[in-house]
Image (cartoon, helix red, strand yellow):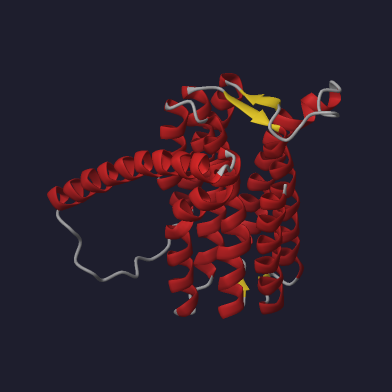
Length: 275
């Protein structure tokens, strides 16, 4: 929801660089920092369903978006000779509609699978009343929307004052801010030894970012993709594949792999700043 609020606010204000780089930066942060730090604290086991269904869907979606924003311009001979800030591709409304439809279909599969394979309820806590749930839901959504507006306005001001591009601000500062819920949730789970939740949290968040957040943002305002963002999508695709191989080889993420992933994120940020 924080990513959705920020990217939607950015799209409404015409700040497409923030809308896209927030999604890409958040996904990189989730994979390399959230999963990486969890693995450093405690080796992270992988659920079979995540490896066979959820993560492959994430990989296919990442490659598909990259193909649209970078692959098609490359085949047309448009990419060579472009500068970092030059527009290389477009996330238009047709692709946005496909991404949103894909996300709805994916949720439907999850619901059907959960109903066919029910798990026993382990939470004995007293449930909240419907009125309390409704109040907290409305209040939370209002704060998220207000926070999204504040983040976009502040990020643009920082970019102007520091002479930095909106792409870099979205890739680093905004992505870090919107990904803090995933980081806190996964670190708390890892501290309690419930590391299995960390992988599902990251994969689910990344899928929603790529399919729903990017889809809604582009549906509001088609997103022009500059060369820097195409490069970041390539990096995200490679990182997604590497993380999948780490998880697949021994059906878990070890401490040294987590430390390597954190180091890769630091290297990527340094590269983005130098670029």
